[in-house]
Length: 140
Image (cartoon, rainbow, N blue to C red; front, side, top):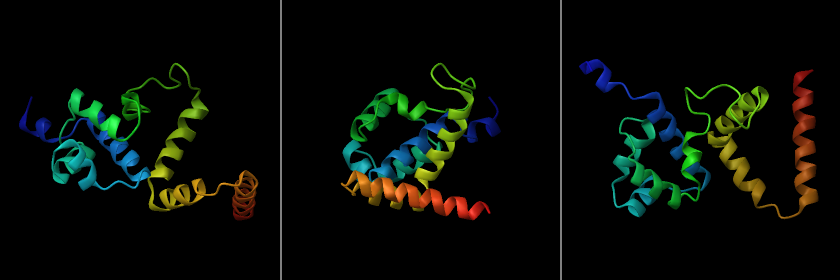
């Protein structure tokens, strides 16, 4: 392996890191807090999330436990997966990638956190209807 290849993160490591960041942000957990739970520094968490450092199997299991997700969560929609994997169709793959990207954005996180705090199902449905109506107005 050349020196140039060693410095470029593996696409799977980048993907796993981005999924760690996504889940950590969904929970509103800081890099410092995740690092404390693992007994490592927040700088190490940053390196994992960027894909600069590869996450070992036992560390990934610990991260999954802390973030309350199965280890497989970190590999969902990973590069190199066959299109239309075992349990998904083509349309689901692209919409899932969009949903993951949106949920990782600052707006998506804020919307998600606020929405789940609404206990009344009818109110939640009305909000969905409102958003759909606003989105339809945008396309005209």
